[in-house]
Length: 221
Image (cartoon, rainbow, N blue to C red; front, top):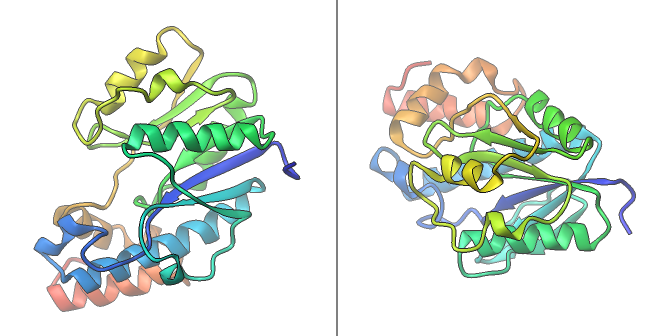
């Protein structure tokens, strides 16, 4: 049984060059993209550990030995062929362990304020659903207080209407929509992150590495 009622379900992959942040390789090398992803992962989990909830890290395919030592409650394998299946199984795993509220999130938004995640947990503790829309049309966060497999089955992902499709499936449920935020997936996102570098933790791995990339590729800092 969990020591706390709330769980943050973090989706991540081993930082293997050529398998993570591949769209960034139009600007940086596969090795640099993987290292940037590793920095995102380290800093995100360091921040998430401050939330006072259990952190369950769901790892995608790849060599787990490449995962750095991370401050998580448990490390589990993502199950399912599609993203919808993996999300459905992750929530089922969390509720099956006895958690009463669960929020799923990734690590692709290094400037995201922790306050948005805290607000999601506050809202779902009252029985609602919380969602954080991404600027690309998806969502960076989804919080539930009970299983909702209908949100994920036969859902198409990786297009600009994922957030809207999910909200339509939610219907008239008590819904909290968090502020929109951006993921770092494209070269322009990396340039934007370079401009927003002061929002990153001063001692974090991401801030130092973004500064190095900015100097290497003449990004704005």
